[in-house]
Length: 544
Image 1 (cartoon, rainbow, N blue to C red):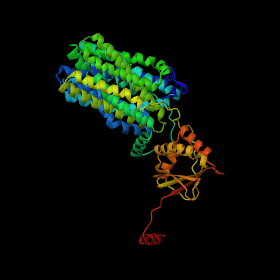
Image 2 (cartoon, one colour):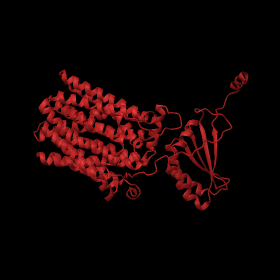
Image 3 (cartoon, helix red, strand yellow):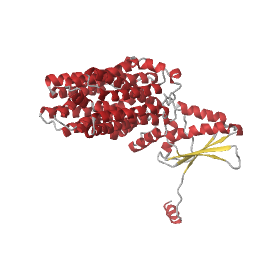
Image 4 (tube, helix red, strand yellow):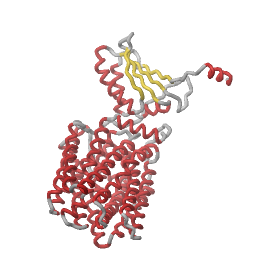
């Protein structure tokens, strides 16, 4: 990540709040998050007081994150193919329904651990639908230069309520009981529904027909797999989620077994975690100025490792709170940095899907980590679980040397200048496969530069839809080179050209500069035609 500080201007943390639509949704989301934190505090403490096994206590965190592993990719494809606003509404409806059912079940005295976990899964399903659509909508609501500040602000906002919510939840539990906590959480989930129903915002629509869901998922997975920046970000996010979730998943056990505390102590420690994240969020712009983002995220992962390794060494509430504040700061800087990297590396046509794959893997790591560290704590010891998680976080920090990430500045599509070529045959959108051949004339002294560009060209064309990409050199005319690839249908060929970003088009300009022919590189389009038997030909002739 060498160039971001000099080439990419990051807005101030509060600048995105100048936009009314973003401000309204952001505020409503914080209210809903406050209710969710109160609810999570109540669920965790109910599990502990009802003598649930250590593994089940740890799975409270996993129950709300596991659905994201299974549903986020589908939700991202829906968000890119349909109305992101509609997907957000559906997600919040599901969250509100689950919260109301939790309040009713507690009111009726039904506090079975499996029922509570099951409703937690339903909350997670709603979040899995909402999160990719909400985060992908940031680029629709704001200018591109505001995206990093908006992503950080979203994390700051969540951690502001994290500073208040758990302590508030503990106070409500101690003073009024769990029913009040669940009722307030259910009411808070109605606020985003009202705000999103009231607001509407402009989205740049594709001129091409909508993709099917299966095609959209396939294209999103292919784009992610062919983008080295996004692959690195997702790999690091998955391992970070798997290890860092131990801090929150095992915190109730730390309060009960190490500190001999109650719900107030639990709320205070969660507030310390949120306070550390809040301070880090406000300082993030300054931190990005003095060091590269990749190095900052490595340092943040190291801070989380120090938190994990410190927790089993103390029985002091003050020292534990300080360690959690450090862990909260590392948590925010790592997650907001990865989120920003993926947002900026993804064109608008696929951003919902790349974010959803990131959430699926990250939350899948969290759910797996909740189970692993809970099982280790139950079968061995709490100290071993936290020590193992700390070791994994140290490995995540070291991954910056092997899988570096950088902000991507040219992933915007802009206005497509592609004009479909005139055809002598009439094609349907589903006609295909289409074979594309582009011929270049390359002088001997330009071959090395040409091959270097073609290496990027293969990646660019493949991630937007090209299949079976090859580069060929003529044996009769050595200066003649041919780039060949296929698309399944004519519509896929049109989509491929509309998906090219500004950076992709600059690569095309570099190839054009290397072309040594009198005319522009020649593109030839053909359609694969199946052969027929003699009997089929006779049958066809009889119909004509």
